[in-house]
Structures are given as C-alpha cells and as structure tokens.
Length: 182
Image 1 (cartoon, rainbow, N blue to C red):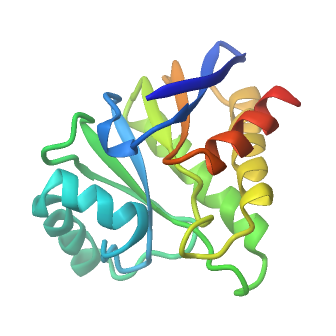
Image 2: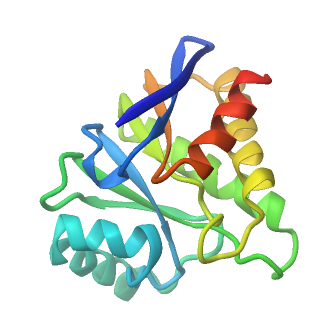
C-alpha cells in the first residue's frame, strides 16, 4: 500500500492509495457490484476470492429477499476473511446506458450514507464503474471525488477517513490528480 496524496476535507482525511482493496484494514471496503450481486469479475471477483464464499452467500440472500438492486443502490454484508469488517456493495452504471454521471453520483452517495448510518469511521472506495463497466476513468474518478467532497460539505458523518484506491498506477494517479488539483 502506497499513499500518493492526502487532503483534509471538512475534517475527513481523504487518502489516495495505490494498492489492493482486499488488503485494506478499514471498517468497510466498497465493491463495485452488478444488480444481482453476482461477484464474478473485476473488483467484485477479487473481493470474494480473498474474502471467501460467505460474502457471495450473504449477497445472494439479499437479492432473494429484495430482488435485484437498482443502479445507485448500496447494501452491506460481512467481509468474510478480509481485514475489513464489512463490504458495502454498490451498483454503478454501465457506460452507454444513459445518465451515467448522475447514476455514478447516486452510487457514491448511497455508499457514504450507508457508511454513516452504520457509524463507520473509515472506508476504502475503488473507481466504481471504471473497470469492466466501461465508465471513462478520468471522468469517473473526478465524479467520485467531487461527490465525496459535496457529501462532506453538506452532511454530518461518522467518517474520519476515506481511501480512494486502485491496483496498479493508472487509477490512483487519476485520483491523485483530481485531489491535488482541487
């Protein structure tokens, strides 16, 4: 884990991290999920592989009870064998479905609201929708950061630290640029 930059926004420390989200020791990591919470590929697949099948099992139970999630919704499960306590699953938009920017904002807001409701102190957020869902990475990382900043300026929250994370250098560098240019 390598911290590229950090910034205090309304009393919450935002850190940009190059590293593996499944190794984050935080209250919750965020999973960019599909509406069926079927965690096969991308970040979702990595989370279940590292955390164990109970994450998928809990996800299946949620979908059986409430049906598929809408784009922008978020739910929480345990984290299995991960160092985090919970996984917050949110459904980001698939590029090309229309109104993707607003849907991504809604997904990020859902995560922040759920984290606050659960009284979480620190969470780790990947570049939701910027992988297999095809959202343009530069635009997506900017929307994610701006949505967090807006939420922190308008809401009281239990959060003390938010990590913006990606494996490899591309996503963390995009997050770093948007945070440092703010």
